[in-house]
Amino acid sequence: MPALDCLVPDCLELAEALAPVALCAWHLSVSADWVASHEGATDVLPTPCRLCGSRLGVRWPSGWLCAVCEWRHGEAVDGELPPPRVDVVYYVRFDDRIKIGTTANPRRRLTAIWHDELLAFEPGDRLVERRRHALFAEERLGRTEWFRRSPVLDAHVAELAAGVDDPWALYARWTSAAVALRG
Image 1 (spheres, one colour):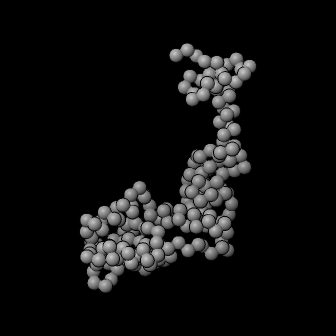
Image 2: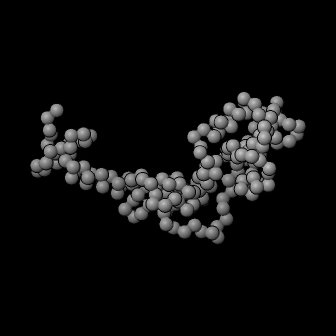
Image 3: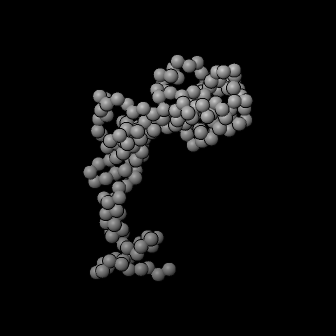
C-alpha cells in the first residue's frame, strides 16, 4: 500500500501507516490530546479511589475522577455524612449449608454469624430475601434462613458470583454509587 500524505492542509509529513485516519504522528497526537480534554481518558488511577476502592479512573485536564463512583481523586471523604443505606441479600456458607439473609450493614451482620465463607451479595431488601426463601423452599432447613446446598441453589449463587473476585468490592461499588446519586 503506498504511503499517504497527511490530510491536514500544508502538512508535508506522511500519514501513519496504521492510523484510522490519514494523519501524521504529530497531528494524531494533537487529535488525541483534544479528544482526551473533551471526553476524558480512561486510565488507572494513581491510587485506589478513597470512596469505593476502584482503580479505574478518567483523566481530565482538571484532574482525575473515579470511573465507578465519579469521586474526584484526592478529595477527602466527608466523615460527617452518614453512609448511604444499601440493602443487600447475602449468601454465606457454613459447612454444607447456605444462609440467605439481608442487611443494610453487612460487615456488622456477618461478624455476628458463624460462617466459613461469604459466597455472594445481591442488591435487595427483605422482599428480595423472601423471594429467595420461597425460590429455594425445598432446601430450607425448618423455619430458619439456612438451606441445604443443591444444584439449583449452587447455580444461583454461582450466577451472582460470576465475574466477581471479591463480594466486598462489589458492595463498595454499590455504596459509592449511592453516595454519587445523593450528590
